[in-house]
Amino acid sequence: MDADDPTLLDRWRAGDQPAGRALFQRYFDAMYRFFATKCDEPDELVQATFLAIVKAKDQFAGRSSFRTYLYTVARHELYRHCRGKRRDGQFDPYVSTVAGMMTSAPGKLARGEDHRRLIEAMRALPVEQQTLLELHYWEDLDAAALGEVFELAPGAIRTRLTRARAALRDQLEKLAEIPRDRLATDVDLDAYARTFSGLRAS
Image (tube, rainbow, N blue to C red):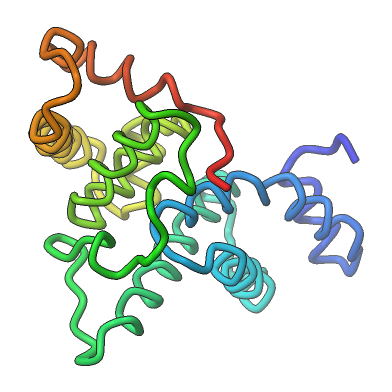
């Protein structure tokens, strides 16, 4: 099916199951990539996200794109999963990192040493910052789209992106394996991180 997302969604709502499957198939790789750097069970989280969409398909009002709506649901599913991984149930996306919750090594996800290093640095960030940067760099979401996903104003997103870039640069420099001039400016850092856009983390 070559129909756009709203058309597929409307058909699905009307009972066209192939349209729903086509919509999910369109976004499966992106969803898998989203979860693979943040949990040990990406397939389960992809299924959980799609199931949540199925259960609440009539709640999508079309005020945002289906793509950003999907990432919003995925973000909530990720945070629910992270809370479940903690024995005390305490999870703060602004503080907690996935580095201590995942058992898979970055090398299993990476395509080369630079990619491995970047994933390792990302996973050392608070989950909120990691998610923000990955969606910005690897899914090419701008401040407006990120604002829809994180339920914040674009101005607040830009501020958080600035802080997240600084935190990522610090983590990469701690690894002491990347020439400093490759990360000298935000433009350099963005170009470096976007090198890995489109790679399937599996």
